[in-house]
Amino acid sequence: MSRWLTEPVPRGRVAAFRTLIYLFVAADLVVFTPWIRTRVAVPGELYQPLFVGRVLPLPTPTPALVAVIFWALLLLALLAATGRAPRLLGWAVFALYFEWMIVAMSYGKVDHDRFGLLVALAVLPTAGRARHGDATRTEAGGWALRVTQIAVICTYFLAAWAKLRFGGLDWLTGSVLARAILRRGTELADLIASVPYLLIVAQFGIVAFELLSPAVFLLRERWRLATVGFFYSFHLVTVATITISFAPHLAAMTSFLPLERVRPVVWARRLLTRREGTGGRPVDAGGPAPSLAGQASAAGRPDGP
Image 1 (cartoon, rainbow, N blue to C red):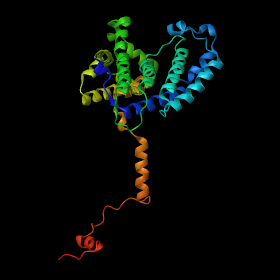
Image 2 (image 1 turned 90 degrees about the vertical axis):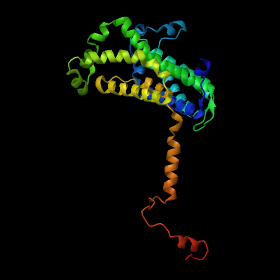
Image 3 (image 1 turned 135 degrees about the vertical axis):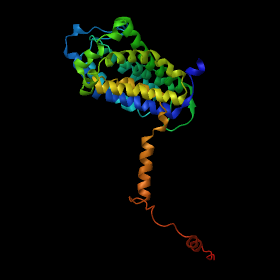
């Protein structure tokens, strides 16, 4: 179990994952959760902190407090994405984003798609330094990615457990998806809903998929990546039908992927170098090849017969 939890991975993968996660945190503040800043507009007595918010205890959000968290988190997340001071900046980003989520989820609604992202932010500072493209393997980085993977799969499995715990078998045979389509469905969802019993079959399929999700750890790498691709396709269909986005979860799920192979900066440099080498013009590969006689003459040797 220890070998599995700390299976070494290339440091380049850790560096790429770290950059992606911290850039997502910055994007989350301005794209996905800017509404959190409006929470302070409601009366303070409506703030019912989560259990962790009562234990610590954390102050009731005010406009000044939320503004400080927002701007500090945005700046630190962008700095952390560079890979510098991974422990100092990493712990600071985790603490601020954790408080950001407590503010968001203490007014009656708790989203479960944030679990994997929060775990990733909590363990990335322990991975140590890592540079993009570094093939050296690290157990600390492997542990950080593995724990994040477990959190991602727990999100699926525990979602199925919650469905059966609170909804029972009626969740499988009821009108859960039908209600979701009525509330926020798209034209594609309307087409699917018109097929008799298809939504019921889909509900059975969703629960089966979530309960079986831990099996991804038993698969070989090729099949594991294919399964993760299926996970992404599931969320693509979810967005396309009932417009529910699991963006934080999808960001955390990149912990399964060989991100060290994705190096946009290197690709851009190669492209620029190639253009400079050809003077900005494409190489003419269609002309005739030089003759052997011409090559010999150019080299200062007499032509052959």
